[in-house]
Amino acid sequence: MTKKQKQILYRLILGAIFLILAIILPTTHKITKLLLFLIPYFIIGYDILIDALHGIINLSPFDENFLMAAATVGAMILGEYTEGVAVMLFYQIGELFQSIAVGKSRKNISSLMDIRPDTANLVLSDGSINMVDPAEVEIESTIIVKPGERVPIDGVIVKGSTSLDTSALTGEAVPKNACEGDEIVSGVINLSSPVFIKTTKEFGESTASKILELVENASSRKSKSEHFITKFARVYTPVVCFSALALALIPPFLSVISTGSWEFSKWVYRALTFLVISCPCALVISIPLGFFACIGGACSEGILIKGSNFIETLSKTKIAVFDKTGTLTKGVFEVTEIHPIGLSESELVEYAAYAESFSTHPIGESLKKAYGKEIDRGRISDISEISGMGISAVIDNKKVLVGKPLLLRESGVDFEKCENQSTAVYISIDGKYSGCIIISDIIKDGSDNAIKALKKTGITECIMLTGDSREVAQKVASTLGIDRFFSELLPNDKVEIVEKLISEKGAEQKLIFVGDGINDAPVLSCADVGISMGTIGSDAAIEASDIVLMDDNPEKIPKAINISKKCMTIVYQNIVFAIGIKILCLILGAVGIANMWVAIFADVGVMVIAVLNAIRTLNVKNL
Ligand code: ADP
Ligand code: MG
Image 1 (cartoon, rainbow, N blue to C red):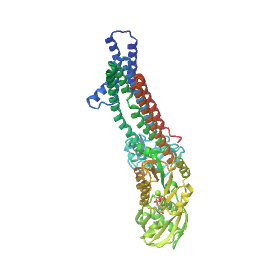
Image 2: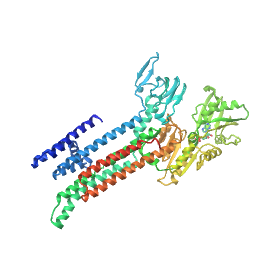
Image 3: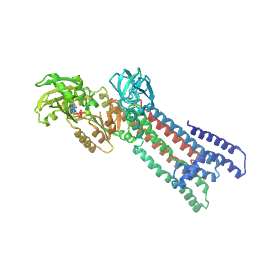
Image 4: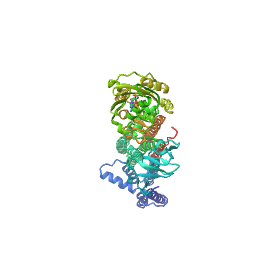
């Protein structure tokens, strides 16, 4: 409890004592009795009365303060002193509970996301260590991270090797080993021995800061349900107020005409009960809280959701579209065959590796690995990467093309196609076909289960898009049980196909696209929900996608969908439950069955239950 919450609690206890005194003190004198009840009334509710007055002065009276003030002042005027004070008391208890519960779950969620340390150990040039604010550490500085500490800034290990706990980022519990030369991202915890890290980014640009920024902004992107609740509250409260007014005036008027008696106070009392019931706080609080807790829970599983609108869309996913390389397959190619023409095998690999020297594409990485030697950048005079096609480069003053068949064909190079079920990289030197290198990729361990689990979530079609050859695509699709695939695509073709798929499906059937962030940013942003994976540190993919999976395990995709479904179920439960109970109480109040006691207990009770229910979205471990 915060200091302020404690103060409120003491105030309520004091008010309650005075209320009990007022009830048990024997007075028959009317004014004395009223004064005795006014003491606890003001102790308990003065802030609400003041806020209600502010609302009236600002000409926007229809909020819960006004409702409570009007209902309790009315009750006092009717002489229902105990009820007037008690309603105020229970309303305040409800508010207090709510602020404690919300504060607590916000704190829980924030601690889940507390991945950004406040200090960094900067290694100075004389070897001494200085503890500084990580925001002051410049790029290319050396920092030391001791066992048990969280890495504050992204960088590369320059000395030492250790194992890392990446669970805060990826949800993956198994420690990861890292040694000299390995990249290391902020947010992970160093487990075993101290490592020296040369920073490659500023603190604010580092992974942990980026992730936090993203999650903090998530609540500003509201879902349709949240918009509905805001609108609902705006309409609902005035409607109930005017109904209350009608209830106070029309039936007495009718009864005067028919029976000649007024029965005014009976109807005013019912109208006041109406006002108490009409408080919409259960919804206004619990719906945003549910989404917020869901985002926090998903984050602890390595699933970053950039807004509650995406939770809602994701829960309606019917079509899942995947990129192949790096998404369903590992994207770690091994060279399996080399077919040179007119030069040696090693020369062919050398040219390929030189051409790929600046590429971050998985194919490029694998060719560089196969070459295995230092690249002499001086031999390269020009390089350009043609997205989804390959590389064009000038090496030793010779024009080298490395890529898919289309790349060579477009430059008018004659070549024969390799008949193979694996990916083939074609190479031409100075316009002459010089051979091909066969590389093979491995399907990820989780892909198979992911597709199966996705179908269980109610997805009707899984589709794969790839720039690779038809044969390779066919093989992967049939191994995994993919329903449809499109092959030999350029990045633009992927956008066109996704747009076409979106236009063909119903508006309530949502399409997700899952990519690895390498040349698929345009597709990620045109899908209903774009999911990028395995992209810790890749800014472009984090920017373009709506959901970021922090490890590259495809099984997180069905998990994300299940999380979103659970969240939406809870949100709908709360909407139906809260509105249902309210309407029931309104009817019972109007016909005189529910009195003010029932009303206040219904109000506080619904709110407590809705808030507790909303917090359940935080728990996503076993989905
Ligand atoms: P995917 O759609 O499977 O993710 P990409 O669109 O990244 O594949 O690439 C499609 C094809 O283009 C690859 O299969 C490869 O033949 C060729 N290609 C793309 N980039 C490169 C590169 N850097 N080096 C060689 N070939 C490449
Ligand atoms: Mg790709």
